[in-house]
Image (cartoon, rainbow, N blue to C red):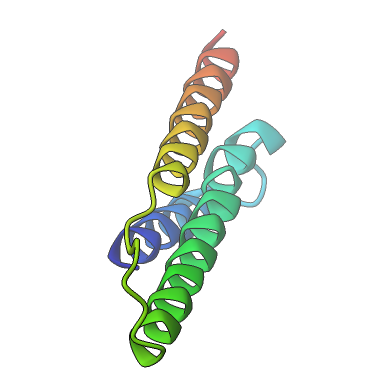
Length: 92
């Protein structure tokens, strides 16, 4: 949950410092992080609910998730590459 707040804050800060008359590519640079932070929030809430219900049912487990963090990491890496590409495009 902390990472999603940091990502959302970074995205809002980038958009806040982008002036309204700047190109759409500069605004896109900040907007790319918003869906990523929403995905992190949704995953955290889903995991919290799932684990809380497993604890209530006294389920033996498994409590860990291997696929979710891997998918989120790939999504974050792709968004960083996309931001880098947008920045290179605006510099040329």
